[in-house]
Length: 226
Image (cartoon, rainbow, N blue to C red; front, side):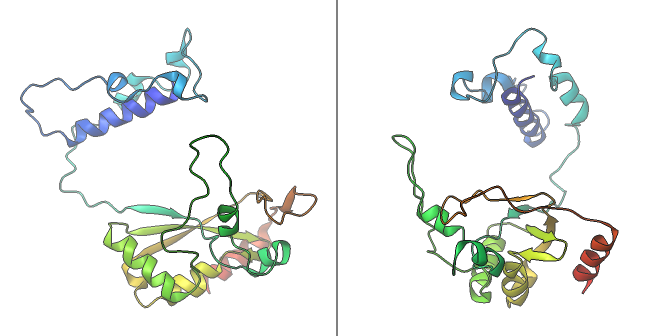
């Protein structure tokens, strides 16, 4: 099953979960016809070939994995949103890209790549500083009011070297309304690569290599506990 068909099948399974039993005997459209789009609109989706149904994930396997008989109307779910905290000055990044640098600069200097490409984009709230507790309070209030329960925050630790942690430590944790949102940190355990086109060093490559050992893990654990 191709990726697009798989996504469509998942959509069909969700629709089945949301449909009350005894729905007048109506037959729902096939997920493939309901949610699919022409393959030519998705350049990264290869055309189906012989045996393609076995190449990734069959609809039969999907039906076996998702029990649509379970009622969900009495269940409480938590909505977790990923949070990438690059929208504030962080000393480590400033050393490499200049005083006051944030990823807003990449956004501000973006240019359209083809007709109709809607760039640059501008944040509705302006160029805010998410490490400021007052701004953090506004973000928390908005997220909680619109049904988000948890932020899963990207977190960077390279043998004790950190960056972007100011959003959590100086903003979120010092916000007066922080109890309205839970949070979790997601250790981004990979090399920190220079993907920023503005003010880039002459040799982009790797900014920080991610390596670790037992002593580093113990240090990381102690830091989080503290």
